[in-house]
Length: 438
Ligand SMILES: [Zn+2]
Image (cartoon, rainbow, N blue to C red; front, side, top):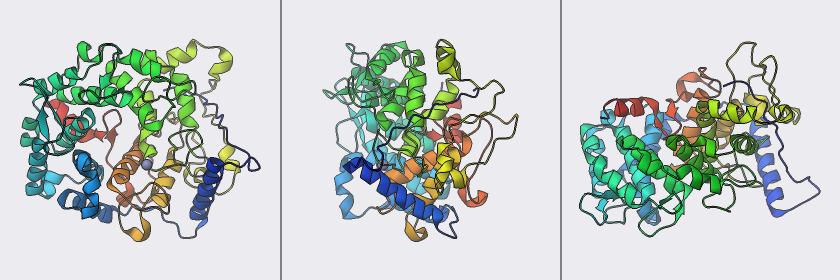
């Protein structure tokens, strides 16, 4: 990808224009400043403690987790994928546990209407849902055993996905009689891709539907006329990438919105304009940049169709970020970002990948090296945030600059496995699975 100067047009309320959301943002910035100013900050990932925490999520959970009964397939994915990012293969470490997990997912399969048509519910006996079908599929790909492979009967999964196709809009309903949104589009196409059944019938109209969800801000909403949101933006962009329909989107406007979601002090991403930075958006927003990197041809074609003024391409190929964050003092960008990119070095993604790693390592790890990651300082860890913080950390290490791995902190504890950004499965697991796909 050629160097592009991303205009940073972050609009934040001045300190004297107080509002509830602006005050909350300023408070979190102060918390992050204090963390980054602390002497002895090591930016070390509590690797083994996090492995223990994720294995705990697969084995047994306290009674308080009953509220997540409809998300048990998700819980499996968050833990199995988190472990894979930490280079732990569940089947090698604990064969019996891997078998139990696959059998549990098998019990989540549920027929929908026709004989050969099934998806996965959030738990045994629950209605099949496209999001939990995606989660179960990714977990099975990651476990990767023969038993896992046999659990996905691809023709039946395809029939389930087609049963959710909304022919009127081109999108996908999330379940029988459910709403049509960008989440449904992504989950359906990512599942079909991993099952090797992605075809024109499934992808038809998806680009048109997602384009109707792109807001004036540049990000993507769940439904047409909704507010741009990080999770939906990733889903919409990745769905268009899977459908081969990226041209349906205004990618330049999307990239500008994404770049402005990264907190100048915190280094992490927020999910919406004027909202707080949150660890899980390390993936939902950060994951869009590698997808855009892969789509650079489309992106550059769209740029070249605009005026030279809007283009702002650097003549000598040098990086030309707006460096306003570096003038602020103690912030993630000053501490973790390489001071300069040597001439001739590969192009960076238009996000501060070192600063994002700093946010995840120093603000999102649970206190006292207990393992697991969280939304932000002051709140507890959970499996969802552990999964998506680690996914974001992986892509910040592997996709900051094309072909160069940049790791903040000690290499041995901090280096994660590379992730495939479109489906969010560890690359080696994805490659092994797809190489056996007929
Ligand atoms: Zn979150």
